[in-house]
Structure formats: structure tokens, C-alpha cells
Length: 450
Image 1 (cartoon, one colour):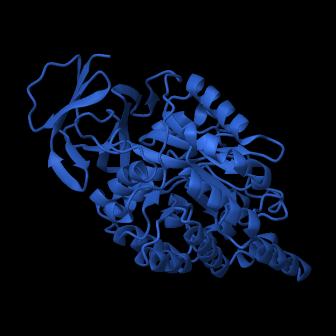
Image 2: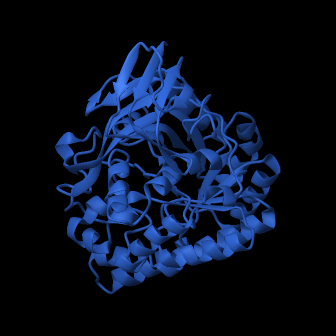
Image 3: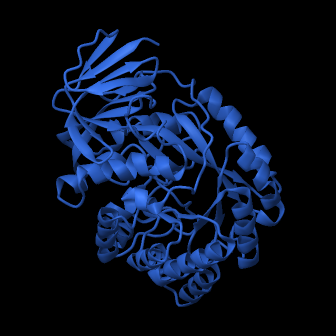
């Protein structure tokens, strides 16, 4: 593969900020240090730029308008070098069949290295396959505590049973934490009262029911002795429950997403179906609490929950699908918070790169730019002022949730294992060549994630 020298940049890695060059040889980091005197097949001038370990986006859904080929492309333009896809096993589908199909297709078409989470829609029939999936390198498994009307909800019996199986198999549980039955009752009551669909959506998914479900899942995981990962935390009250559990020594990891850090339910009222996501956008106070949770270490990870779907603002709200495109805009949006003093640059790198790698057992192959690590990096212009527009995005979605929004910070170049994938808005590599990454989820000490 040859050699590449990334010269003159400011390296942000492992909680430090240094002026350092990076010599890449055959896809891995060979040397790191100031003013490296080394010959290389290509020299990349990073003067005035930050050199970041590539973002590891651990929450992606490549089954909508962005698929296993296109989602990694739009993610790469956002500084992402590794993705972990949710491979959902729908009712009637064997878990191992779903995982095998995802892996086979992604290995042939993906631009980015990838791992998989198992998604259990029918744990009563699918959880027995977990030990074999863990042996095959998939060690994290998600269940829904909500969406009863859609037939997706896992009841407490099967949740407890699956967490027990996971604990014995050496895996990690993941839950979409909202109280599904209470939500469905509230939705019916609001509909009977004649409230507008958007207002109904906000009222029927209160923060209290997210916090309740988080607490219930933590309690069951504690009894089972199973590590637990909570994706897309949206509410301040949920943070309180997570904080208490971690103080008690529980292995509980928590993620939030850029949409919850940058948007509120006021944006939902304006953009309607375009911002229909679950859990819903909440109050400004929740948004502020999430930034504080990131800064203090209660939240470990920022991930995109990229689920790009074809919809318009004025679509029938209840018929409109959940989800939005997020992977390409995630890093600039969160860095805009850094530029405005909400988070340090070093902490931002931890929640995007190092912490995800540690939680899912990919560190130090991924998540750092130490000698011997994969040469996965993003060159980032921390002073660039840009405006987010759908026309400049690489997602197949017809919109962005942030049209016209100004941010500070822009991705200049993305490299994976020494190969430049994207540079200044242009895709530089063909899809394919991705590696499947076996995970070892849930073994990281939460104290390592500070």
C-alpha cells in the first residue's frame, strides 16, 4: 500500500493535543512525532488543521434510502471511518441468517470497515442464537421497550431472559428505552381528545417514560450481570438514572445523538414529519443537560442514528417513518458546540473515537492514532465557517434536518487504513475493500471513558 506522511497538523488523541506528524506504512500508523524526516509516496500537508482519529459511528441503519453502499459514503464525508450497523432480524427471520446477509453484502460494497449489532424483533425465538452470534464476532444486541403497536416491543419476560443469555454468552444488551404500553395508551387518549398529530407525538412520549424504561432495563441488567448500552439518550431525567447506576458500579454505557444536542421540540413543530424521530426531540433544558452529560462523562458516546428515509414536512405525521440523515453532519454540528465552549476538543474526540472503540472492543486497532493502530483519521478545519445545505450532502435523502444552519468546523479529508476516502467534498475511493470487525462489547471499565 505504500507510505503516507501527514505533516504539520495538530494531533488530538488520547486526551492530548500535540504538534505531530504521522507516518503511515501499509495501512497502519508507523511513527508519530514532531517534524518526522521520512520519505513517503505521498505527503499530505495538514498545516493549520486538526488531525483526529477517525470517527466510529456505532449507530447506523443502512436499510432505507441510504443502504450498505451509500451510507458509508455519506458517513466518510463526515469524518467517519468505522460504522457499526444494526442488523435487524425481523419476525420469522433467524438471527444468524440476518447477520450473515448483512456481513456478506457489506464486505462487497462498503467503503468503510464495519461491525454489526444484532437487532432482535422476536427474542423469544431468536435469543437462543446469541451464543453462536457472539462466537462469530457480534457481541451487542438490541431490543425495543417501545413500539408495541408496531409489534416490535420486547416484554419484560423476554428482556430479562435475553439479558441472562447475553451475560452467560459474554455479550452486551442494548435497549431502546421508552415505556411502550404507557406511550400507546397516552397516544390513544390524545387522539380521542382531538389533539394535532405533532402535539400528540410530543405529549405521548414524555421524558418520565424514557427515564422509567432506562431504570427498568438497568435493574434487569444488574440482576442478570449483563453490561448494558443505552442508545439515543434524549432526556435529562434519564441522565439522572444513568448517573446513579454508574455510581453504584454498574456497567452502563450511554450514547446521545447530534439531533438531541442541537434541536428541540420547537424545531419539530416547525419541520413536522422531517423531524419525527424516536425518542422525540425534547425541551431546551434537556438539550443543555445532554451537553453537560457529555462534558462530565455521564454520556460516553455520540453516534448518528442515521436512518435516512424519503419524507416531506407535510406528510401524514403518524404514517411518516421515524428517522433522519445525520452521519455526514454529526462531526461539524458537535464541533460547533466545542467552538461555543460547551465541550473541549479533546473530550469530543473521546466520545467520537476512543470511547466507542473501547466499549465495543476495537481499541487500539481503532479509536486512536498510536503506532500499530489502523491509519484511520480525519483532517478537520476547526476554524472553517460553513453552512449546511442539502445540495452539498452525499446522502440519498431529499433533505437535511439542518438546512441553512451555520456551523464552525469542516471535514477536509478522511482516510481509512492509509487510503484517502474523501477529500474536500469529493469521494476519492471506490466502494468495497471494507473489513468486518469482530467486537468484544461491554468489557470496558466506565472509568476508562472519562
